[in-house]
Length: 195
Image (cartoon, rainbow, N blue to C red; front, side):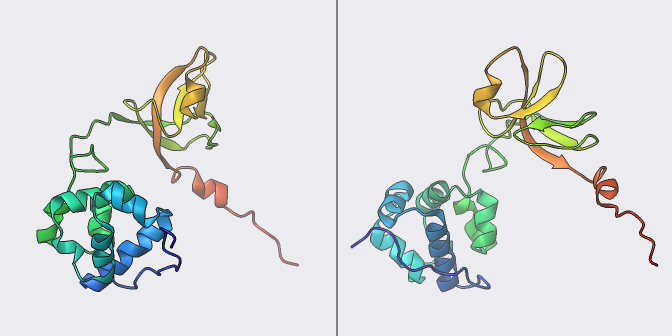
């Protein structure tokens, strides 16, 4: 017998009951591609416990904090995303809270966010037009897409492994982009004359 679920469980249309929370949990586990045995180990929940959650026999809203935190970590869910996808009642949410750094959990927010407007197009792993307003976390230099400044002043978006080479200034991890200042001109269709 294989350790992974063979059938695909659809996400429920609504999540209001223990059974629907279980169906959503099963859907997320399948979507993640994590085998049941691996999920059991990662979440520190027995296989039979997982199946009790999947069926709704045990409501995810009533699990102990250790199990809830194990599930959050195993699936890589943000605390508040779990509250939403499982439609957890207010009284259950404290158990579904981790001390991971914000915004993933409810620990201290260690980000140092700055907002910059691109005066020239950004090139590299991510291309953005001039005029785009971007957000950069100056405390993050090891994951995601990093914004670097080359010796000639040009900005580039690169993976962390490339940021460590050469004479570059690492500005931080690119965390967001606001296109509202550039989209209207970019999507404006030329006037067409109808004959």
